[in-house]
Length: 47
Length: 361
Image 1: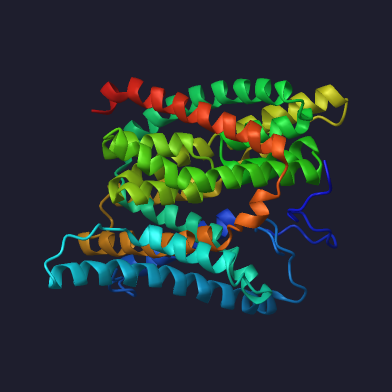
Image 2: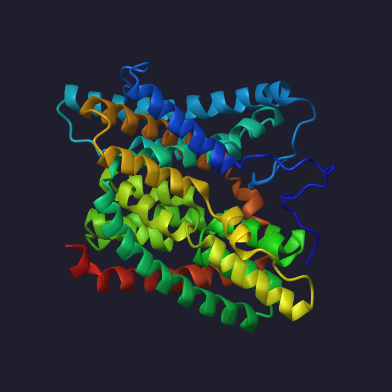
C-alpha cells in the first residue's frame, strides 16, 4: 500500500487529555438547554 | 487538510478562547448551508401551492447534504472553515440527547430492547463475516479488525476507539475510515430508495437504517430522508448499536494483547466506561425526564425543535466533509472488502427487520 492519502492522524505534539470528551460536552449542552427551557428562560424554539 | 475525513483535526495552538474563535467560521457555514436547505424546501412547497402544482417534496435534509457536497467538491473548503465544520459530530450528539425528549421511556425499553437483540445478532454475524472476508482478500489482520468493527458497530468512532485499543497503524485506520465513510455516503442515498421500493413502513425502515448504516450522522440523515418518524427510530436503533462499542472494543483489546503478548487491559470496568458513548446516557436521562412529565407540551415542542436545529448542522456537515475525489483515491482492496461487507450486512439486517416485524406491531 502506498502512504496514506487520507491524513486522519496528523503528527502533533502530545497534548493533555481533556477532562471531558466531546460526547460529554454534547450531553452538558443538551441538558443545559433543557434546563433553560424548563425554567422558562427560553420560551419557545421555532422551527 | 484536503481530505474527506475530518476526524482528528489538528488542534490549534493557543488557549480556549482562540480555539473557540477558530470554530466560528465553520459553524456559521454549517448554519448557512443547513438553513439554505430549509429555505429551498419551503420555497418549493410555497411555489407549488401558489401555482397549484404538485411538486416532489424534497426534504431540507437532502438539500443541506447536496449543497454541502457541491461546495466541498467544487470551490473546496478553505482551511479557516475546517475546524468549525468538524463540530458536526458534536451537534449530532447534542441532537440525539435532545431527541430523547420525543421518546417515552416505555417506548425506548420496548423498541430499544428489540433493537438491542437485533444489534447483538447483527454485530456477531457481521464481525464473523467481515473477518472471513478480510482474510479472503489478504488484508492485514488489524486492518481487517478495524473494517469489521467499523461495519458492524458504528463506523468512525468504533474504528478510532479500536485503533487505540489494539495499537493499529495510522495507515490501516485511515484506509478503514475512508472505506467506511465512502460507503456510508453511498448508503445515505441508496437506503431510502430501497426502502421506498420495498414499501417499508417508518418503523421497519428506521430500524433497518439504524442497523445497516455505519456512521451515526449518515443513519440520522438516511432516516430523516425517509420520514421524521423513521428518523426517530433509526437514531434509537443506532444508539442501541453505539452502546455496544465498549464491549466489542474490549473484546478485541484482550484478543490482540493475548496474541501479541502485550500488556493486558487492567481495569475492565474503567475501560468500558471510558469507551461508552456518554450521549446514550444523556438520551436516556432526557427520555426519563420527559416520561416523568416534567416538561409541558410546548416545552417538549421546543426541545424537539432544538434537536432538529442540531441535526440541521449535522446534515450540512455530512455534505461539507465529503470529498469525492479523496474518497476515490483510497485503497482498492479495503474498499472492496467494505463494499461487499456493507451489501451483505444490508441484506442481513433487512432479513432481521422482516423477522422482527411481528414483534414491532
